[in-house]
Length: 196
Image: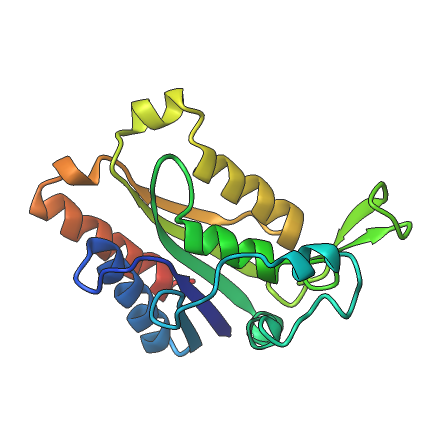
């Protein structure tokens, strides 16, 4: 498969970058073609512009020159893996901005009936498998009490967008994990991506 791996962490020595590297390496060793996108390294411009918002529903003109290369990469993928930390019970701003700017009408969905009140129909039918790999500073109980928005969003959005139940690999309370537990989670990511 052609697997598009998206990463959102600014520090090259971070644990999250190690997760990204493990995912990319394991997928490549399993024989997949990997298209790795590091949003920070590519300096992805995450802010939705006024013009983009005004033209949001104007398919296909809403695919601006700034996002067209990212749309092409999504459309060329058979699978998608998103590697990110959870910050303040949500996605890093750069990743949220990527979703806001790239997953526009005509790319990730259309509205059957032609207006905003129609039925959402997924467009990225080329993507057959989806996985999220993430790390939390908070423990599982605290995240659960807060509703664990990243997990809930990934699972529901993944189903609605791709019609596929995503894999969700999460390490909670990472700041209090032993080195063995951290390495164990990286090994789990390698195993999951090798069998992806």
